[in-house]
Image (cartoon, rainbow, N blue to C red):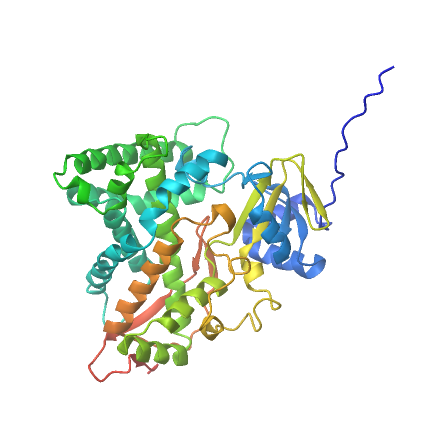
Length: 449
């Protein structure tokens, strides 16, 4: 008789779960996952288990020590959360890649988003901000979200895609619709077949149009006599080489360009709309910002950006899928196939991490950078958003130009609620604001009449 025994397999030990039926949890998740997670946290503590659409029976972490362990776990233990935006961005997207493939692409794509290259893009963003601002109705209230979308879209199309002329106009006209469409279907179950008229069929049609445009932009860039000196990220990608000397394929370039556009355009615009929504309700902060920009400073403006991202994160979840036999995080043992989520909104609203967390207080970030474990609007670990520095620079330049040239009127209206656009959250009323050109002697802050 054989004396072989099965290898020891760790017994799953999961955080507490709700007694609510899966259907009820699912309905609450779809209606407002932020409220569901807040309810679970109050009842069960910082770590708990939920049973929700897309992610199934998932563990949600709020303990920062465990979040650090999760972010530091290697690709042999965890992969990117499944499903993710890679479903709509392509198999070569950074969202889809794992292990060595992910490391190679990240190494290749990181340099354009740092250092001198970043400073070269500032003038593009300033130009787009001022060009858009000239269309704003002086003295009349309007939603800031749509203008911010146009600014960030145009800035990325010029700085990243190097687009101009006819291709720029086509992308400007159609990309907002394509991105919103992709954002919405990314949180829906994918049907077993692509039936006519389905949102997936329409998305795939639009994706083919996008790929054709990228091919045109690639051909134009390579035909440019000054190609070697071009600084747009598409040209940098075309000139880049892996360690073995090979170049990025057209498929890799198209997927990564779409990833940069989808992940950077909408999220940055939403954050800017939230910044305006916050500043119109905090006159003391706004007055200090005007004093600072007039003196040529930027420290408080950077702290405001950090605090907006903390208090109004536009992406509220990140996570991993366990691929090892099991994953041990603190006292929990999580089996293969389980999704482990980090509720960004809940962590950043934790009173133990951010005292008076419900208060908009940029001073908490003056003189110090936020923790990469408790302040996580860009995710964390090796999957932290590769364009985080670009997004931060873009928000800083847009706010700087806005403060330099326009007086922002205060409002006594209630805070705007959160509205889900599928993946991202934006102010429910679009970050409404009333502006007027700044006079020479203006403080920049207009009182409510």
